[in-house]
Structures are given as structure tokens and as C-alpha cells.
Length: 212
Image (cartoon, rainbow, N blue to C red; front, side, top):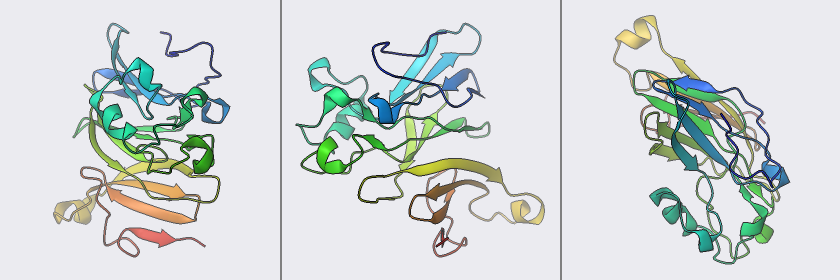
């Protein structure tokens, strides 16, 4: 299966695929080399493309591949450097929860890295450096979380992990039975409810532990 959409760009694959229900999900790397981020879901039995979720808009002359890109485009400058790809690659670990049929991807920073160069008029640049929870069968977002981890040139977040509570904690009916854990470039450790994307308030200070 060829997962690359544009062979003229410097795409790479730096993370392993993840079997997620009926799909095999794979992202890509190369955000710092001028590519456009996306994750692809392939039918586990046939290998055919089932869905593709782009994490940044492409050249507006080519239209938007799915409604989420139309929404995301509103958070970018219309004069953005579409020719430089946009970044936002799902280059690291991909996590799957079989109970909810959600696959979780972490997206990287934008390209070019400085906002003033990438999207000169500013904007939130939706889906960059975020956690995106996708339906494993359709690739449609269930929820997204942007930790707003910004420095002058980077918006980087480093990977994500997933774990479940067990024993007495699971039996108690507490919130956040399943959790997503993320670290950020500005030295925060964040825990989210894997089902909703809301902070796990009993962890640290409203879901955040500052590491530095």
C-alpha cells in the first residue's frame, strides 16, 4: 500500500501503523521539510483506502477534501504559504481504544515554524500541534485538543500515551477511566479523558502538572 499523496514532497514515515478495528491507520513525517500532514485509514482486509484525515488545509484552488478542512481554513490567513505544505504531520505514536473505536493521533508543528511566516495574519491554525480523536471506521473527528504549547518558533508537542484505570479505581465509576497523556514543549504533562477530551481534573492542577 502506498500511503504517500505527493511524491514530489519529502514525506517520510517515522511511526508504526496501528490496527484500529476494521482499519489500519498510518501517519507520516516530514513536516519540517515542507509536507502537508494527514493520517490514512486502510481497510484491514482489502488494503483499500477507507478514509484520509488532513490536519492542515491545502491550496484553496484545489478545494477542501472534507468539511473539517473548510472549518480549519478559517483559522489560517488566506495568504498563508500553502506552497510550503503546512506541516501538522501525525509522525509519532498512534493509539487505539477498542471500546470506543477511537484512534488518537498527535499532530506536529506547522511549516514554516514561525506563525508570522506560515500564516502572516495569525490565527489558531486548527489541528496543528494537537491531539485529534478520530472514529476508526470513518476518520471523522470525535474531539480535538490543542494544548496551546507555543514558543517563538515552535508549537511542538511530544507524543501521546493511553492508559486505563484498573481495580478499585475502575469499579468506583470515576471519570477519566481511560486517559490520554501528553507532554508539551513548555514543560507540561497533561491528562485528558480519552472519551471526551476534557481535562482529568483530579490530576495535578485541573489536568496539568508543570514539569519546569
